[in-house]
Structures are given as C-alpha cells and as structure tokens.
View 1: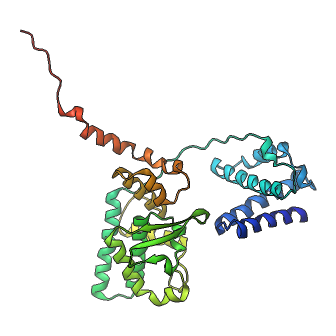
View 2: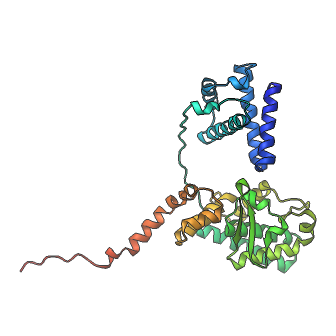
View 3: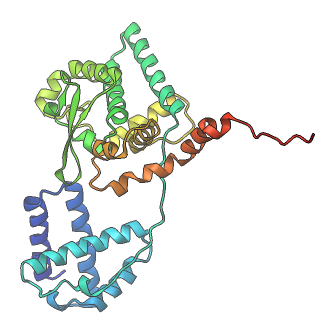
Amino acid sequence: MTHIMKEHIDGFIFHCQYEKNLNHKTIKAYRIDLRQFAEFLGREYPGIRIDLIDKHILRDYIKHVSTGNKPKTIKRKLATLKAFFNQLEFEDIILVNPFRKIRIRIKEGKHLPRTIPRHDIAHLFDSMYALQDETLKIGVPNRRTLARDIAVLELLFSAGVRVAELCCLRGEDVDLQRGSVRIMGKGTRERIIPLCSEETVSALTCYAGLYRREIETAGWFFINRDGRRFSEQSVRFMLRKYVLDAEIPERITPHMFRHSVATQLLENGVDIRYIQTFLGHSSITTTQIYAQVTEEFQRQALQSRHPRRGFGRERMVDN
C-alpha cells in the first residue's frame, strides 16, 4: 500500500468514525475491504494514482473479489469502495466517482430467516427455570451465572434485539421501573422497546439485583465472571450449552430469537410497520422477508377458517 493511498484510507476511516459515528464493526469491515483493494492495486497496478482509477480497473477488481466470495460479501466490499470514492469526490480529491461509470448487478440468493419452533423455545425456558429452581434449593454457587443467562435469553426473545445490541447495553439503558430498554442499533439509530412479558422483567430484575455492584463498576448491563462486558461469543457458547442440556436437537443461534419473535408477531396479526420499528430496520423491505416465512402459517389459517368451508355444495336432485 502506498503512503498516499494509506492517507486517503485513514482520512475516510476518520470521517466514518468521528463524523458519521459508525459502529466499530462497520469500521473494522471498511478497513479490511479497503486494505484488500489497496493490495490488489499494488499487485496489478503498482504506483497508480487514485485519480486515475477508472471503471476498467474496477471491473478487474470485481472479477478478483468474485472468486471465492459469496454474493453478499462481494456486495459489501463494493459498497465500501463506493462510499470511499464518494468521499474522495466530495473532498475534490478526484473529479468523479468511477462507480458512476459502471453498472453492477450481483444476484444474491434469498435465504429465509431460520426460526425456532415455539415448542423448542418453551422447552428451553422450562429447562432453564427448572434448573434455577433446583439451584435455589441446594444453594449452588453458580446461581448468579444462571440468573444472568436466563435474563440474556429472555431479553433476546422478548425484545428481538441483535446479540451485539444486547452485549452493548449500558446499565442506564435498562429501565426496570418502566419495563423498557433503550437500544442503540445500526447507524446509531436509537429505539425504546417496551418489555411486555412479566417473566422477562422479573428475570432482569433478579439478575440486576445479583450483579448490581459489577454493573455499577463496569457500566455494562450484562457482565461476565471477570466483571467485564459479556461478549457476543460468550452468548453463543452459553446458548449452545443450555440447548444441549435441554436435549433440543435443532441448532439454535442467538439471532434466531430475533427471527422467531418477528415471525410470531406477524403471525399474531401485529402490523408490519410496528415490527419494522421494533426490530430497528431502516427499510420496510428488510422486514417484509418475515411475511414470506409466515406464508405456510397463513395457508393453514385460511384452510381452517375460510368461510367457503362453512357450507357444502348443493347437489341437483333428479325428479
């Protein structure tokens, strides 16, 4: 990577981090994508000036990244480059963004969100609460950990939050008196989610009481055994453990709770616009994918409740 290219990339990262306030995951992805592009230029077009990068070079790069990468990854890498060149154009470092001269269509297969069957969710919670009842009887030392784990899964399902959003909750973001949580979502979009389940509020209250000192010291709401922020990877490991303990054969990930609550809200007749707000989606198009998941549910509902089933066909009788 040339010194000039590094300066341009650093300037763009500064803009994204301090002027646009993008989250650390987005910043990290931008760094990786731009470094890979710079390495490609160093190999294929050594010493080229930034203002001489044109659509032909971009096409070569698209061919390069298309090898071994999924469509979603390719689209993300190109979106990073578009944003980078847009900023260079805005700062008059280049005359025109070379992406304006090229049309790119990358087809991405549609994958419907995987959800957790209702009976598996119920069984998982029943198993964890039964274990909690047992620990209270015999007074085992891991009851605090179990209380935290129950609170984590209750919030994942009740609030439909992303696991990253859950792990970044601060103590002041959780209002147990009002029964709500404040979520800072993608693009620093803030939303307030009411907790409509008494079990969830009770689980969070129990956890907060047991970890009050650690929460006040660390500032984070969910704390690990070292008194630090509970990590996303720890949530995944924790969930895997309880799924195995409950002998649930299906593979369950934290994000599937989000898919499941959205799908079940839609099945229960909640307006899709509210679900969009609830999930923190910037576009209704993202939320509409759940409508496809519920198609079979709707088919079953129609088959059992359609008014045409209420009467039979009158047959002609010969005299």
